[in-house]
Amino acid sequence: MSQDNMKIPQATAKRLPLYYRFLKNLHSSGKQRVSSKELSEAVKVDSATIRRDFSYFGALGKKGYGYNVNYLLTFFRKTLDQDETTKVILIGVGNLGTAFLHYNFLKNNNTKIEMAFDADPKKAGQSIGEVPIYSMDDLELKVKESEIEVAILTVPAGPAQAITDRLVDLKIKGILNFTPARLNVPDRVRIHHIDLAVELQSLIYFLKHYSDSDVEPSQLEDILE
Ligand SMILES: NC(=O)c1ccc[n+]([C@@H]2O[C@H](COP(=O)([O-])OP(=O)(O)OC[C@H]3O[C@@H](n4cnc5c(N)ncnc54)[C@H](O)[C@@H]3O)[C@@H](O)[C@H]2O)c1
Image 1: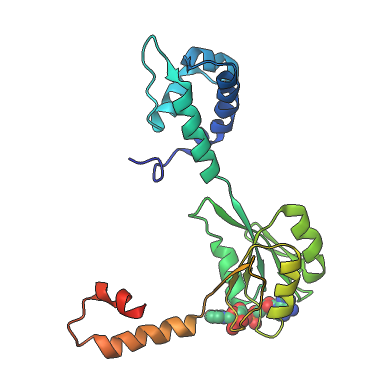
Image 2 (image 1 turned 30 degrees about the vertical axis):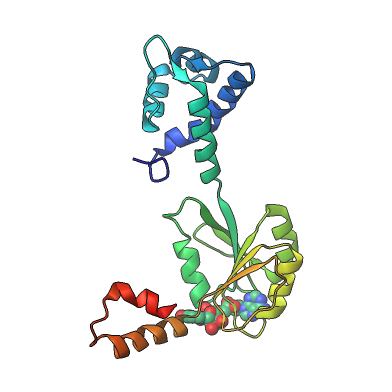
C-alpha cells in the first residue's frame, strides 16, 4: 500500500508528532538507528505500542538493529504535512451554506470549515454542527486571528463582490464561489466558480447530442475540452 492512501489509526496519528520531535533530536545528534526500547523511554509510550504504531507505516524494526532514523523521519515529515488541516470559512448561511456546514467535509481530514458568517443578526451567535456563525462585522477580526486562507461564498450575487474585496484585503488565497456573480480579484487570489446550472446544462447537452451516437462515455471528456 502506498503511503498516500494508507490509513493510520487516529490514536497512532496523535502520537506521530511526539515520535517526530524525538527522532529529529536523535538525527541532529548524528544517530542513525534507534530501538523501540530507547524510544519508549524517551516518549513514555510502551514499546509494544510503538512497534504496532510503526508497523502501520511499514517500519519493521530489525532485531539487534532497531529502526532506521532517516526512514522514519522522511515518513513523518510527509505524513504530518499531509495531515495539516486547511481552515476554511463560509460566508452566507442560507440553504446552500447550511447544507455545507452540516456536511463539513467530514470524510476529508485535511479540510474543515472553521467558522461561518452571515449578515442576518438572527443567525450570528448560533452554530451548526460545531461551526460557530459570526456577524459580518466580525469578519476581519476573526479571520486575522485564525490564519484562514480559503473562503466558500454562498451569499446572494448582489453583495458577492463587496465581500470578495474584503476577503482580498484579508489576504485570502482562494475562494470557492457558488454565487452567479463573476468576481474580480487580483492574480494572487484563485477563484473556483461552481455554477450548477452550467453543469446541468452541459449534462443535458451531452445526453441530447451524444447518447444515440457511438461516442463512448470515456470520450466525452475529450469532446468537452
Ligand atoms: N440553493 C441552491 O441550490 C443553489 C444552487 C446553486 C447556486 N446557489 C447560489 O448560492 C448562493 C446562496 O444560495 P441560497 O439558496 O443558500 O440562498 P439563501 O438566500 O438561502 O442564503 C443566502 C444567505 O446569505 C446571507 N447574506 C445575504 N447578504 C449577505 C451579506 N452581505 N453578507 C453576509 N451574508 C449575507 C443571508 O442572510 C442568507 O443567510 C446564491 O448566490 C445562489 O444563487 C444556490
